[in-house]
Amino acid sequence: MNAWEATLSSFWLSTAVACLSGFGGLVLAWLIERTDLACAKFFRSFAALPYAVQPYLLGMAWITLGNPTSGLLRDFLPRGGVYGYAGMIAVLSSVCVAYPYLEIRAAFSRMDASLEEAARVAGAGHLRVFLD
Image (tube, rainbow, N blue to C red; front, top):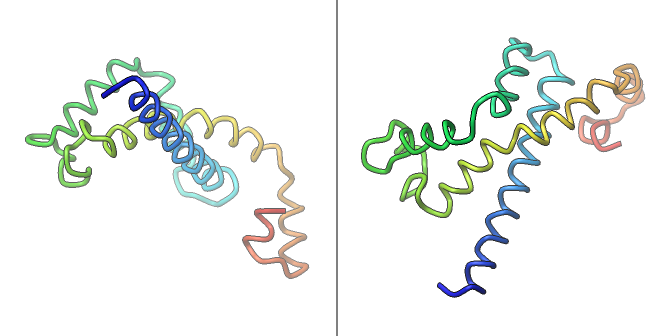
């Protein structure tokens, strides 16, 4: 692999991780802050866990769990486990989801819920209320 291929591979990896973790953080923040999710306090703490755990411990945990021959999650991860390209995207996205989650959660927590209720009463659908 030459330098150009490595640069392109890194670019696509970072783009995929940014998109997946951003979307995951958005969905997680919306579920926790804007719905009546049971155990929301637990999920708030769990979603921020990558801030509290050292990165090398997270890496060791994923290597142990996602090992393609003996890992507990080998049946749920793509072929190659955490060592393949899709596995790297899955691992990095699961760790990086905490960053957009905390930023989006702060914005959702400051929103006035009465505006959403007024829009629903006026006949707006769920998607329209979320996007506007």
